Length: 206
Ligand SMILES: Cc1cc2nc3c(=O)[nH]c(=O)nc-3n(C[C@H](O)[C@H](O)[C@H](O)COP(=O)(O)O)c2cc1C
Image 1 (spheres, rainbow, N blue to C red):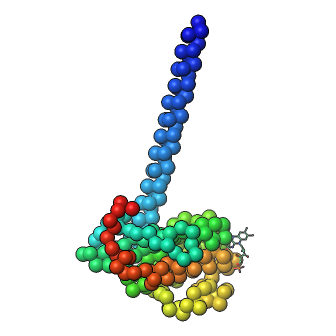
Image 2: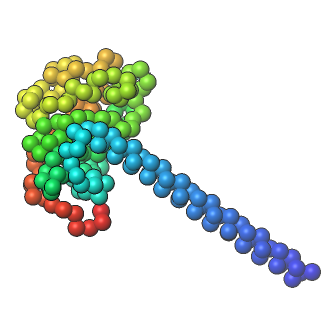
Image 3: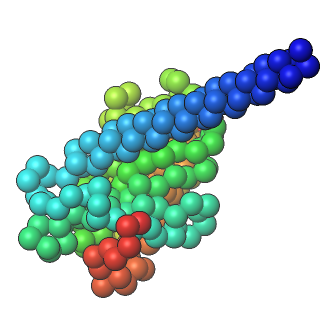
């Protein structure tokens, strides 16, 4: 009798362990799927920023991580090439200066540092206020295309509300300013990074 109860106990514990393992596995799988989907969405947006047919490499596999001065996380920088020659870089970066926290965005620039386009991928800004940084909500984000360091002049890289050349967003100056400063930071990093290092093919799996 005592042995029977003991065996039943062992079975229960084993069952519990198996269930826990199964759940942990499923959880991990779900996380990986979500990360995968996010990555795929990011890459779809990424290619949207580049002229069609302008590059022939696989962007997913061609990137380096670069630190952005004053930012917590390094940016992942995808590199577009045509027959091996530099075509564009796309910064996938997160600024923590949004009104409601992190804003993840893509900043594409040509090798001379001119902006090809900017898109916001993820944010938690207020609907109707800060969310106008999304291209689906307004054209505000398009104003960066064609800019570069010096155009506008350095001291005018700010929203009009803060004395700069960029349009702000009414009642969402914090959000708008966060995006302006993130674009500027990407361009500054691009400007300060050694070209050879920037375009060097990856050696690790990264
Ligand atoms: C409910 C609520 C939501 C807000 N959402 C945002 C936002 O998404 N982005 C932002 O910059 N400021 C947001 N604000 C802050 C104010 O609008 C703040 O006054 C503004 O950032 C200052 O910008 P302004 O100079 O254009 O008025 C929010 C304020 C409140 C009360």
